[in-house]
Length: 161
Image (cartoon, helix red, strand yellow):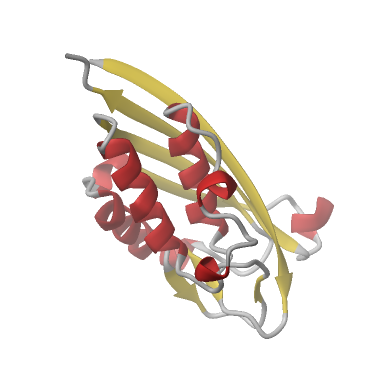
């Protein structure tokens, strides 16, 4: 067995008239994330980390924002498709560590539900899914409430014959 590590990073702008979705969970807030899909920045960063660990590129390569079939699609669906892609290559996600960077809203009350949803999407134990949230002490674009950023690190197992 070979272990592979990948890092993902994504940012989306907060705007009116959009739902705020993180890890496939709707978070009550007066702003949502702008994007072609549902703009779930957490799922996008995790997808990029998985694809990076597998040396397959990034989410835009597989689900371009110029393709109408992905307009407003749930990013949990895209994450499941990324997982299927690596499974077909004899790889599996072993664990995830992610950090949501947002001044507002408070994410802590939703972390357990987000972890469970991500674990189900990736067919993992919730013990192998870490989701943390932090602020930037009102510094930068996240601190001003202009957007949300996420860093994600993924460890993949690759079965070698």
